[in-house]
Length: 239
Ligand code: BJW
Ligand code: ZN
Image 1 (cartoon, rainbow, N blue to C red):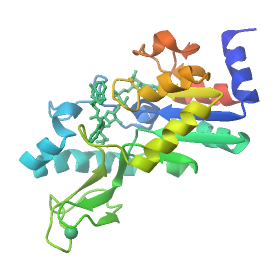
Image 2: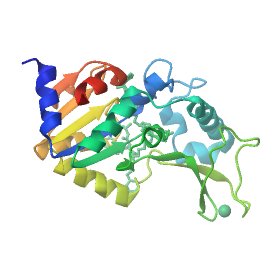
Image 3: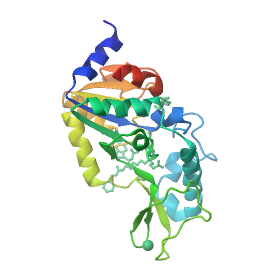
Image 4: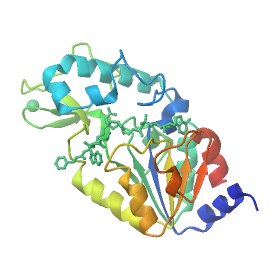
């Protein structure tokens, strides 16, 4: 039996599967990742822009980055990787998809048990009154966008130094600790606490499978590393 066949067997017989995805699963939809070559925007790193301090200093600059990303995502389609996970959800008794992505491509592929630990790029939140709203316009005529109360709006995402949404986070921990199989797909596993779910799943007895063309800090502790792009590997893994 090949390693791939063995992994397919784990996936097929699992009662409970949890999946953690990162930017790599959307790479083949044409959305740049954060830390691979080509992920930089105007020479800024995610760590320079995805912070409350950067937004306080220059909300227009931070919004220009999000506006650029919104326009790319609006033109993108979910790929075979997103669809394979949506199919797997239908065939698995207990299935939870935990995503660090804010792009909404898992929703568009049909995922329903979906936990967005870093928020959603299509949600805006007022920095003055806290009101949230959905806005699917690919780009805004004026930046930064404003709330009816006059306050500046921010993207409804989680920046460095900010707490993850507590209820979503606790459901993510529960899913990771209850999983028989835990898939880690397209994430550099550098950003915590999300990356900690891999360790939690492993410590709770799950078979952990990584899908990533590159090595990551969790590669050494997983039960199998599938070194391939997600849109290629996931359809084979769940078939
Ligand atoms: C493919 C592929 C293909 C390519 N197929 N794969 C413990 C230790 C050290 C530090 C910390 C710690 N705990 C907390 C911290 C601090 C910090 C942190 O982790 N820093 C590290 C960077 C050092 N964490 C935080 O601040 C978090 N908050 C927090 O801890 O709060 C505590 C608190 C408590 C009480 C009160 C208040 C606070 C928040 C983290 C938020 C991260 N936010 C961002 C932006 C979100 C919004 C947006 O999208 O703009 O999230 S940053 C960015 O990184 C984004 C991503 O979700 C996240 C992870 O990136 P991801 O998805 O892994 O992408 P890449 O680019 O890194 O990797 C892509 C991968 O895909 C690569 O491996 C490729 O090989 C692969 N790939 N093609 C499959 N086709
Ligand atoms: Zn407001």
